[in-house]
Length: 369
Ligand SMILES: NC(=O)c1ccc[n+]([C@@H]2O[C@H](COP(=O)([O-])OP(=O)(O)OC[C@H]3O[C@@H](n4cnc5c(N)ncnc54)[C@H](O)[C@@H]3O)[C@@H](O)[C@H]2O)c1
Ligand SMILES: [Zn+2]
Ligand SMILES: [Zn+2]
Image 1: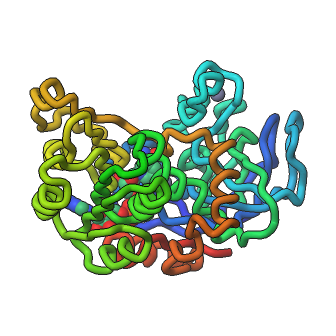
Image 2 (image 1 turned 120 degrees about the horizontal axis):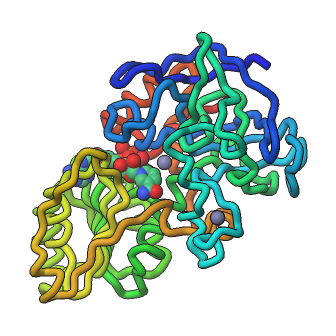
C-alpha cells in the first residue's frame, strides 16, 4: 500500500514528508494506523549524527495506533486493537526478559539496523530504496509495519495522541528516578533538564514522596512547568542547584540526580556527581555522542563516598508491566498525561515541531493524525 512518512535522507537536513511504499506484514508483524507520535529528542540525535544509525530512516519511536492487519503467527492481537508501542521490543522469554529486565531484551540487538526483527529486511521503501525504522517503529508516518514484540494492547479510554506518550518519555523519566535511581520517600532528587523525559522524572520523584525535588533547566518556561508538576525548586544551572542543595539538606546533598538534558557532555557527569551525597546515584538517561569515550569526574568520590553513576534505558522498566500500570496511575489521577502535550502538529509540520524542541518551547510536542 501507499502511505506517508517523515524520512531522514541526510544528517543535519530536514525530515522529508513524502509518499512511501509499505509491504504487508510478514511473520509476527502487524500493520498499524498511527494515532499519535511524540517528538522525542532521541530522533534529533539521529538527525545530528550523535546516534549514527544508518539512513535513510523513518523517524519516530513514541507512538500509539490501531492495528489494521496481522501477519501469520501473531498471537493476542487482532485488527481493531489499540496499542501503545514500547520503543524497545520485548520477547518475554530471553534471559534478560526472564530476569525482569525486559527493557534490555535480546531483541534490542536489532535496534541500530532498523530492519524488521523477523527476517532483517525492510517493509518500507521510497525512491527505490529500503527505509530503516527508528527503534524498529517509524511512528512519523500514517501507517507502519512493526513486530508484535513492540505492541502493548490498551483499553479505549484514552486518545491515542495522548497514550503515545507512554511509549517513551513518561516511562523513561518516571523509571529513571524510581527504578534506576531507587528514589525513596524523604529523598532529595535533582533533575537536570526538563524536557519530555525530565518532566516525568519530576512526576516520579513527587510520586515516591521525595522531600526536595530540584529541577534544573536554563529555560524559564521549563522551570515554571517543573513547579506545576511537583518540583519544589527550579533553578537555571547545576551550580545554582549545588548551592541550593547544600542549604536545603545541610550539606548532605541529593540521593538521586537524573541527567535528562538534551545531549550529554562528558564534563556534566562531574557536575552531577557534585550534586549527590554519600551513596548518591547519578542516573545517565540522556544520550551522549557515540564518539565520546571520556568523561570527567572524581573517581575518588566513587570510593570515598560510594557515589555511583548508573545508566538507564527506558527507565529500567518492564514495558509490558509498567505501561499498563502507568495507565492505571493516570486513571486514578496520580499521573499527568494530557498536560505533558504542550503543542500538537500535523505530520507535514514535523520540522516546525523539532524547531520548537530545539528552542525549548514544549514539554512534549505531539504529531496528531
Ligand atoms: N535512556 C533512554 O531510554 C532515553 C529515552 C528517551 C530519550 N532519551 C534521551 O534523553 C534526553 C532528553 O530527551 P527529551 O526528549 O526530554 O529532550 P528535550 O529536548 O525535550 O529536553 C531537554 C531539556 O534539557 C534542557 N537543557 C539543555 N541543556 C541543559 C543543561 N546544561 N542543564 C540543564 N538543562 C539543560 C533543555 O532546555 C530542555 O528543556 C535526550 O538525550 C534523549 O535522547 C533517553
Ligand atoms: Zn524517546
Ligand atoms: Zn526478551
